[in-house]
Length: 269
Image (cartoon, rainbow, N blue to C red; front, side):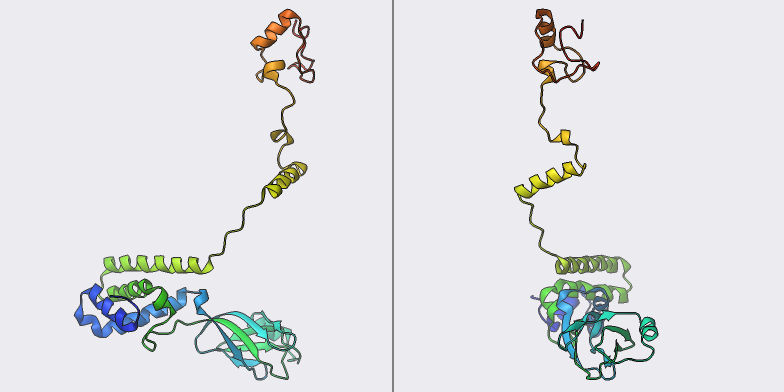
């Protein structure tokens, strides 16, 4: 059976619990889960915009308000207000000056702005709103997009009521996992593009200049000590020994022997 509406949800809860005697309490389980979700979730689907008209720098918050995102004075030009603590607002504006509002705070269920706007220009509030309750709405965005969260959330409350700690812990773990997945999905941003090959070469050059990467690590070797002179361990290889016996000088004049002198047949005599 699909989970799309409030009726679908209450039926599914009864089927999963296999307890017909809890049918009258099912609306309570759903309501308790919604209270939990309103405390936990702050995702883009909850964002709403309201136009508020203040009076003497005070305006009531929307009834479904949870948290603010942005407050903008809608005059010309528009100006975004900065949030301050209530005590700071009172200390900074003891004389209640009049001008274009620059800051705001929240006290109780009201927004307070300063300086006071004599024209009472409208404010645009972008905020997180409460999840519309299913009991008053056949469905909502959370039920439409994440019915599993509604089901496992309500089952968690139901098992807590029946004092079944093991099953309650199972459904609670699943509910919390879904909370995390929804928040991650809401906050997900496109991955940054990979740097181009040209930029990668330029970055390597800048690293060498800044001393972050030793120049020797990206510079091509100028000689071949294992072939033309001493090998890396400082010991003669077979070709060097043969060159010395035949009186042939190494082909890498810039290479130095371990004692600091040029590599030559006479330097090791």
